[in-house]
Length: 278
Ligand code: A2P
Image (tube, rainbow, N blue to C red; front, side):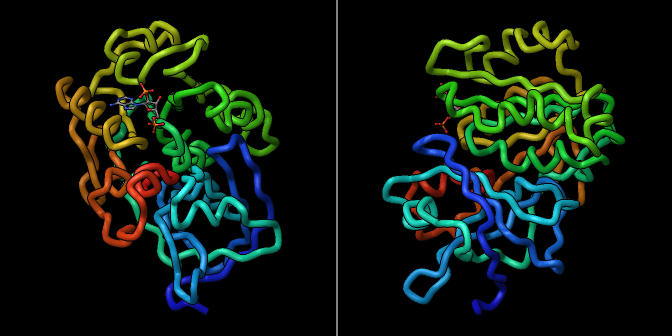
């Protein structure tokens, strides 16, 4: 046993591509988190914990935990984690934390969840939370990746969640999924920043342009995307929130590398690209 961690058993492994995979594990009944938060997760290597920050892709009402990860070829953790098999164990930190929770946002009409790559993970949790739909009239989840095949969870967000027996009824009228791709032909091409700036996303969704009076946003993705999108929002009068001071938009700072301490041993690619805040 490693202090501060529980051991969880892998229940499912799904490889989306040669670079992306999802793990489902058991969940200790004592593990509590708010939807949108992250925890440390990893393996025991040479007798020591080798862990990274991972967003919980499962919602807090679910009995299992889910993590969405990239595979970094020489990444100390993910080069091992990608080979994990059903029945093996992983370490999950006992404490979850993070700023991407709806409680950190001022009331508003439309919630925009803007993700690139594995930054989608915390929003999978947020869109499964019934409270999200009580707080907002509309929820838009965007996912931008380099290639079409990187749009993991696309079928889930487009069809399966809306067909869910319990959540479908509240999700269907409110949730919109808006994928885009930057390095291949696709129905929607371009970075989220460009789609917001050109106004194309508003035309496609038949929604008004961003307005700090009504729109609330959460950002999770590469540090460059976070910086550029935050600058765009600030220039339009949006104020950033954090734990304790609700705002118009939220950024997962751990993802941007400000809390690198627990990630010190990560290769730059691994620490930049892991699920959500890693
Ligand atoms: P692009 O292909 O134009 O770089 P990555 O795989 O590097 O983490 O990137 C994931 C997605 O985020 C890619 O589609 C990438 O677009 C996009 N992206 C990278 N930098 C930015 C940025 N500064 N603003 C918006 N999107 C970005």
